[in-house]
Image: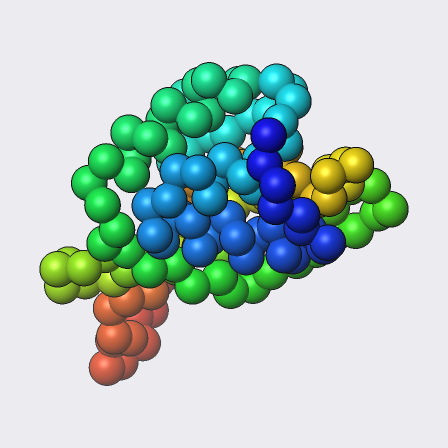
Length: 146
Protein backbone atom coordinates (compact mmCIF):
# COMPACT_ATOMS: atom_id res chain seq x y z
CA UNK A 1 0.00 0.00 0.00
CA UNK A 2 1.36 3.38 -1.02
CA UNK A 3 1.72 6.07 1.62
CA UNK A 4 1.79 8.86 -0.98
CA UNK A 5 -1.26 11.11 -0.99
CA UNK A 6 -2.01 13.03 -4.17
CA UNK A 7 -4.34 15.87 -3.21
CA UNK A 8 -5.20 16.64 -6.84
CA UNK A 9 -5.35 14.63 -10.03
CA UNK A 10 -2.71 16.97 -11.44
CA UNK A 11 -0.38 16.01 -8.57
CA UNK A 12 -0.88 12.35 -9.49
CA UNK A 13 -0.22 13.09 -13.16
CA UNK A 14 2.97 15.01 -12.34
CA UNK A 15 4.17 12.04 -10.24
CA UNK A 16 3.31 9.65 -13.10
CA UNK A 17 5.51 11.49 -15.62
CA UNK A 18 8.31 12.02 -13.08
CA UNK A 19 8.36 8.27 -12.35
CA UNK A 20 8.32 7.57 -16.10
CA UNK A 21 11.36 9.77 -16.70
CA UNK A 22 13.26 8.30 -13.72
CA UNK A 23 12.26 4.70 -14.53
CA UNK A 24 11.04 4.50 -10.94
CA UNK A 25 8.79 1.43 -10.66
CA UNK A 26 7.73 2.06 -7.06
CA UNK A 27 7.02 5.71 -7.82
CA UNK A 28 5.03 4.68 -10.88
CA UNK A 29 2.92 2.13 -9.03
CA UNK A 30 2.29 4.62 -6.20
CA UNK A 31 0.31 6.69 -8.70
CA UNK A 32 -1.94 3.81 -9.72
CA UNK A 33 -5.06 2.80 -7.83
CA UNK A 34 -4.52 -0.25 -5.68
CA UNK A 35 -7.69 -1.84 -7.08
CA UNK A 36 -7.48 -4.59 -9.64
CA UNK A 37 -9.73 -2.50 -11.90
CA UNK A 38 -6.93 -0.59 -13.65
CA UNK A 39 -6.12 -0.53 -17.35
CA UNK A 40 -3.00 0.52 -19.27
CA UNK A 41 -2.45 0.58 -23.04
CA UNK A 42 0.97 1.56 -24.39
CA UNK A 43 1.42 2.62 -28.03
CA UNK A 44 1.05 -0.44 -30.28
CA UNK A 45 0.68 -2.57 -27.16
CA UNK A 46 -1.98 -4.83 -25.84
CA UNK A 47 -4.45 -3.87 -23.13
CA UNK A 48 -3.07 -4.59 -19.66
CA UNK A 49 -5.54 -5.07 -16.84
CA UNK A 50 -4.91 -5.44 -13.12
CA UNK A 51 -1.98 -4.69 -10.86
CA UNK A 52 0.23 -7.63 -11.88
CA UNK A 53 0.07 -6.98 -15.66
CA UNK A 54 0.48 -3.23 -15.36
CA UNK A 55 3.40 -3.53 -12.94
CA UNK A 56 5.21 -6.16 -15.02
CA UNK A 57 5.16 -4.14 -18.23
CA UNK A 58 6.39 -1.00 -16.45
CA UNK A 59 9.15 -3.13 -14.88
CA UNK A 60 10.19 -4.35 -18.34
CA UNK A 61 10.11 -0.84 -19.79
CA UNK A 62 12.22 0.55 -16.95
CA UNK A 63 14.87 -2.19 -17.14
CA UNK A 64 16.97 -0.10 -19.57
CA UNK A 65 17.24 2.81 -17.16
CA UNK A 66 16.27 6.44 -17.58
CA UNK A 67 17.03 7.94 -20.97
CA UNK A 68 13.99 9.99 -21.92
CA UNK A 69 12.27 13.25 -21.18
CA UNK A 70 8.54 13.84 -21.49
CA UNK A 71 7.07 17.29 -22.03
CA UNK A 72 3.30 17.53 -21.78
CA UNK A 73 1.45 19.89 -24.12
CA UNK A 74 -2.12 20.51 -25.24
CA UNK A 75 -3.63 19.28 -21.99
CA UNK A 76 -7.41 19.16 -21.81
CA UNK A 77 -9.00 18.30 -18.46
CA UNK A 78 -12.53 17.09 -17.90
CA UNK A 79 -13.09 17.32 -14.16
CA UNK A 80 -15.75 15.98 -11.85
CA UNK A 81 -15.95 15.58 -8.11
CA UNK A 82 -14.67 11.99 -8.08
CA UNK A 83 -13.16 11.53 -11.55
CA UNK A 84 -10.85 13.48 -13.85
CA UNK A 85 -9.84 12.74 -17.42
CA UNK A 86 -6.67 14.35 -18.79
CA UNK A 87 -6.03 14.27 -22.54
CA UNK A 88 -2.46 15.29 -23.33
CA UNK A 89 0.22 15.22 -25.98
CA UNK A 90 3.36 13.49 -24.71
CA UNK A 91 6.42 14.97 -26.42
CA UNK A 92 9.17 12.43 -25.81
CA UNK A 93 12.87 12.92 -26.39
CA UNK A 94 15.27 10.02 -25.98
CA UNK A 95 18.97 10.46 -25.22
CA UNK A 96 21.13 9.79 -28.26
CA UNK A 97 18.38 10.13 -30.86
CA UNK A 98 19.02 12.74 -33.53
CA UNK A 99 15.42 13.37 -34.56
CA UNK A 100 12.53 14.20 -32.25
CA UNK A 101 9.82 11.59 -32.00
CA UNK A 102 6.29 12.42 -33.08
CA UNK A 103 4.05 13.16 -30.11
CA UNK A 104 1.88 10.57 -28.44
CA UNK A 105 -1.73 11.31 -27.57
CA UNK A 106 -2.51 10.02 -24.10
CA UNK A 107 -5.60 9.80 -21.99
CA UNK A 108 -5.09 9.54 -18.24
CA UNK A 109 -8.04 8.83 -15.97
CA UNK A 110 -7.87 9.58 -12.24
CA UNK A 111 -10.25 8.55 -9.46
CA UNK A 112 -10.57 10.25 -6.10
CA UNK A 113 -10.14 7.59 -3.43
CA UNK A 114 -9.84 7.56 0.35
CA UNK A 115 -6.05 7.62 -0.24
CA UNK A 116 -6.18 10.65 -2.59
CA UNK A 117 -6.27 10.80 -6.38
CA UNK A 118 -5.09 7.66 -8.20
CA UNK A 119 -4.71 6.71 -11.85
CA UNK A 120 -7.14 4.05 -13.04
CA UNK A 121 -6.39 4.17 -16.78
CA UNK A 122 -3.62 5.28 -19.13
CA UNK A 123 -3.95 4.90 -22.89
CA UNK A 124 -1.31 6.27 -25.27
CA UNK A 125 -1.14 6.11 -29.06
CA UNK A 126 0.77 7.91 -31.80
CA UNK A 127 -0.65 11.31 -32.70
CA UNK A 128 -1.82 11.55 -36.28
CA UNK A 129 1.05 12.89 -38.37
CA UNK A 130 0.97 15.66 -40.87
CA UNK A 131 0.52 14.50 -44.45
CA UNK A 132 3.81 14.15 -46.32
CA UNK A 133 2.75 16.87 -48.76
CA UNK A 134 2.54 19.40 -45.92
CA UNK A 135 6.26 18.98 -45.29
CA UNK A 136 7.16 19.84 -48.90
CA UNK A 137 7.52 23.47 -50.00
CA UNK A 138 4.65 24.73 -52.17
CA UNK A 139 5.27 24.66 -55.93
CA UNK A 140 6.64 27.86 -57.49
CA UNK A 141 3.69 28.17 -59.86
CA UNK A 142 0.14 26.92 -59.41
CA UNK A 143 -0.84 23.73 -61.18
CA UNK A 144 -3.95 24.00 -63.30
CA UNK A 145 -6.11 20.94 -63.65
CA UNK A 146 -8.85 20.73 -66.34
